[in-house]
Amino acid sequence: MIAITFVVIALAEVADTSGLVTLVLATRFPARWVLIGVFAGMLVHVGIAVAAGSLVGLLPERPLEAILAVMFLVGAALTLREGLEDDDDDDDDDVEREVPRTRWAVAATAFGITALSELADPSQILTATLTAQYGDPLLVGIGALLGLWAVSALAIYGGNRLRRVVPVKWVAIVAASIMVVLAVISAVEAIRG
View 1 (cartoon, rainbow, N blue to C red):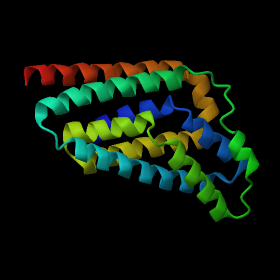
View 2 (view 1 turned 135 degrees about the vertical axis):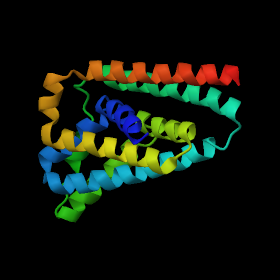
View 3 (view 1 turned 90 degrees about the vertical axis):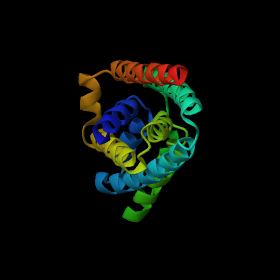
View 4 (view 1 turned 30 degrees about the vertical axis):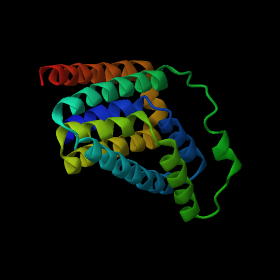
């Protein structure tokens, strides 16, 4: 379950624009402190998603499967939208305005930007969906957190190189395809009862 969650969340996050924000922060500030802030922001992000998924998971099985199918489809659509958007968007304009003076200010800036940019993000919706589907918030949370942290570390330490090798568009298509398959499986389970 950790591995499945890791792969699904990592693929969704690679196709997301928040990795670009992380990369931009790391080009302006010391990478270690950006990573600390981003990791803390992702921890909050996953905590919210796991809590929401746990609440959804309390629903009876048939309606739960129907909701999960819809949530997977929404996650697929959002991932495709994020991955197919133009990479030249100026998402980093807000970052340029504030220049933190201490390493803790860098970490706090990275935390704030990450925590805000990840709200209602495809990876958050998917984490909530996987939590509701599998009913194991701890394992899903660990998988999601590791996936998000891995992608964030890649964004900081190798983002431009990775984007040259694997186009974001194709990562988004693969991630969305996996989510559509999961949506179909959930829909079939909802119909079967």
